[in-house]
Length: 182
Image 1 (tube, rainbow, N blue to C red):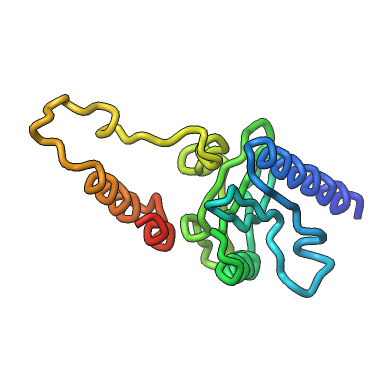
Image 2: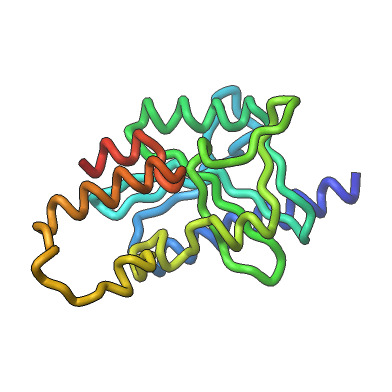
């Protein structure tokens, strides 16, 4: 019992930490009371919005072991987000690391139907906190290392569409998010 209580306290502390960080970044944010336990409705841990984009976030933390979510947790998050008009995100935090964000469709699915995030995956493939809140933006090597030949330049709108479609193709952006952007 003590381990469960201690783990719950740590999870609660991490959720409050995420709420405070999002608030500091200019989001309107709230932590859902008793999310995941004391209510019959399945609620995300955190709701956040910046006036343009709204997120329903399931937050998980770990000392270093892989983080697992049940299929039911993810389905409930997706259901809530769709009905609320928000984007579903899984936020993970490993000790001595920052928060990383994933669309549920980008997570590894186990044979048993659970979802898993390893620390290495979070660091390599997750959206870090500054990018999530719009402070930074990933740039591809092609974007960073242009050859300067202006004759091959196409209009910026076409390039943006191409980048979005490539992100979907490469698995970096879910189709639903691409539709929102396009």
